[in-house]
Length: 136
Picture 1 (cartoon, rainbow, N blue to C red):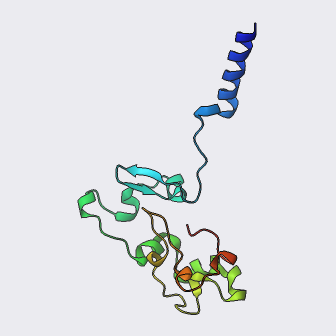
Picture 2: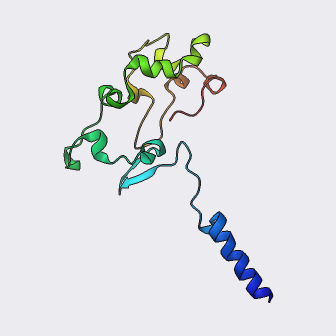
Picture 3: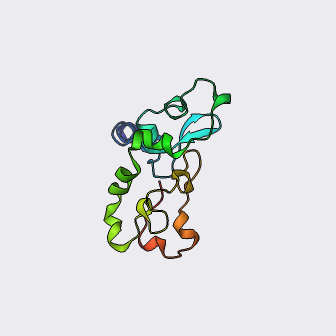
């Protein structure tokens, strides 16, 4: 009777909780694979994006590095992006409307799709962990 009980418990665990076969949770830095040598950030992967969504072409050999205008085609204007992070304006720490660059910072100064993003502010300011979360 005990082996049957253990078998049933193991099957219930796999059925309800995924058990050892469950996929790890997706985090801000967990890439979603799209091609052998490239990956997408999870938030773009969840939207079902493929290479063509951003690169606008069928031949990967023709793909070029995207520009800020390409990002803003989906994310809206630089002002709209800055408005999403305006809660940081009170301390003059809004990276999308900074004292240094205003609305003119290139997206790729911080954000990257196929590799980890970087916090440009941290280059000079060593206290960014106090007011920044992870850079998506």
